Length: 282
Image (tube, rainbow, N blue to C red; front, side):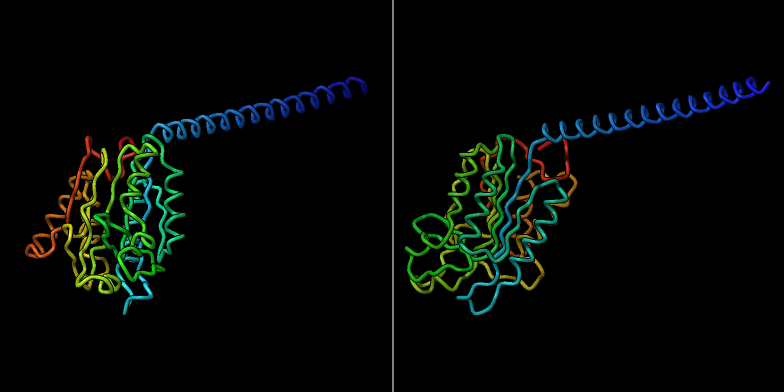
């Protein structure tokens, strides 16, 4: 009888152990299945991201120029506001404030390294801009300019950045330049500020500047510049197509200023570029 009781206990114990092992095996299998499902989901998301056109932007806001009598308050606010809007729309944004020449060169190099053939690439610059030799230059805060030749040496050519985008094979090039201000440099070698020169748009490019070529505009008193404030309003629209956004910005500013400030839009786009948060398109 004792042996029988021991045998029954052994059987019960063995059955209990077997049940626990079975549960453990089942739990492990379920855990592995969940891990596999999670891995598949991550792979699918990464695959979708790889197929989705990349959106990258370089945003530069320069406000503290030692040669100016007072800092520019709006370019840094503009850079921050535009950065927020672009990031909400899925752009990978590199933002640089109060950039020296070296800062700008390094930032442009970073931008170039991210460009791939399907990229929609945007450049924004707010600060001082000067034309020299029919070319427009973004002015870093550490510029030393006493004559026209210094502009080419100290500044960064807008056209050179567009050319770099083209060489890297960017699908579309978007440029917004808010730099048509009276500046502290030109009075040293010119009677008055000449604004920016016409910026030549390469293939599939769209360019917006705060004024027409050769014109300048004074800053308003708002948080953002007139150009960026209106641009942000239009970027928040449901169907934020790039060419429509830029043109609506131009028209609104022209009407609000009674034609005294008319931004310039230059386009060679051959497709619609969506600036809204549309994961499926460009």
